[in-house]
Image 1 (cartoon, rainbow, N blue to C red):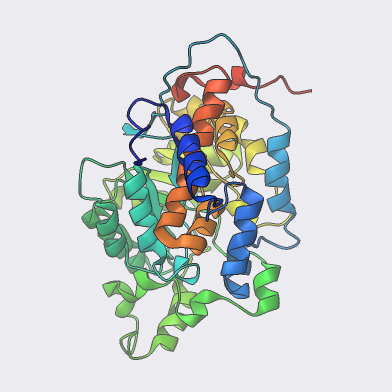
Image 2 (tube, rainbow, N blue to C red; image 1 turned 180 degrees about the vertical axis):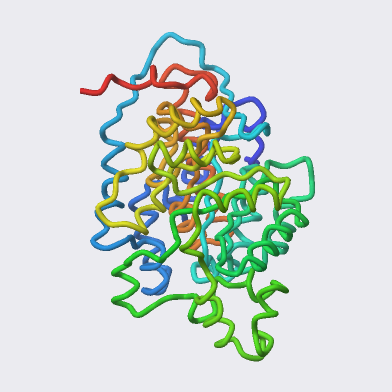
Length: 405
């Protein structure tokens, strides 16, 4: 039975179910990339080094923010409806004037080379193959140009792809990264605002492990002409100096809202501000010229005892749309399954970003592992949408949720 036997005429959820069931019945084997998130995470832990797993799975401090992100989903319950025609479903959404085939993208995750030898390139190939938008991290293990080539970012045929920007203390480095992203064909800049300093991450500190000091996850710097101008020797000749210099210029904690004008003037690409939790911060970003925001607490990696990102989503969405009805609102921090994405969409997100789950798929089986995770999330979303009584993601709003107590 070929992969295409059910794809043309069958909505995706049933197609994926049939694919998994048929493979299992023919081979007697369970999926090599586990379907259940807890099993996926456990398998990835076994496959990764202790340091790499701690870096991916860990959060700030005692990791209460990570736990709060997940508990917040328990406070919102979908209400299934019946006797509605859901024989065909439409998962497309509109974000920044582009149509996304699905309402989720692969989030910017740094240092993917510690998860799998093919790292970012494998994830980019998977995103392109699965027709899912991808957000390239500044802290990628490969250059943004090499990742763009795997994404075929210059093509108009595939989904949009964004470049996530950490604003460097050296403005020349920031300017160079932005220019390179434009030249490589990325469709937007995703400016991360919540990391002017690295959070207090106990797992990494206990293990004495920061991958950047080992020269990992800094490929966009070592390939950048403005960064290389700061070095006394080429990074290939003196990688330790390059790593130290990166740590020195990584982020600029002096930035204020007034600095955003420089970036908006620098690029013609839309800019989406990521890591926003307060409605007033979101409003000010959009008022300054941002095309949207990502409601996120960095997956619980920055501030312990912080608010759950999902709890902030409705108020942020209202503030953004009061300022600009056309501005985009995206969400990350705690998405584990398709049903989670549906809850976030019902609370006001236009789309969500998927993070740790695809990293665990990457660790297990490279490109194929990421594709398996993406396929499962899409299938769960498709079926959850239908069973809640909707045939189009665009129509999902808070009517899909039970009234809060």
